[in-house]
Image (tube, rainbow, N blue to C red; front, side, top):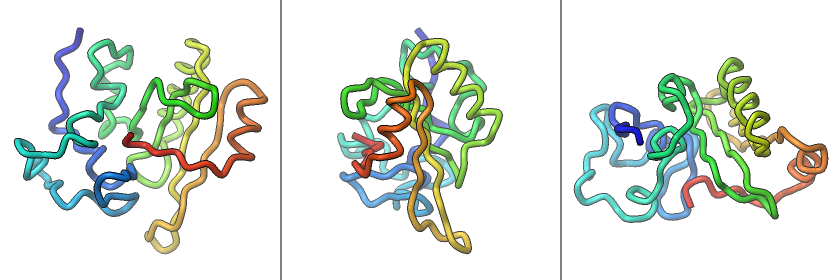
Length: 156
């Protein structure tokens, strides 16, 4: 059991995840996110704010301290689903996941035999345009990721 808490990390609120519940998308943080945390923390909505936990924050997290999203450059989510697979989903806390962090996540995925989907936020002149997703794991999984146009909701 870990005693980790969100703050000072605010990566999930800083505009690098998308949500169908609140207006937030890459490059556009939640309107309640401040450099001191959430301005409505005590009254924040159930979905997604109270229910979402990144893998680093989970009580049974196997992620080391250095994988805190604001420190490693990626928000890691374990136990997500893509088609029939249980996956790890990693999205950058910027435009791309730093190479060292991506290599660490890939090693973790391989060690635990869990397919990985990782995101790159594409932009033009610093303005988000769309994302590219890539897969890591079994060849049929990687091919399925490349061929799919299904959305990946990151804050469900």
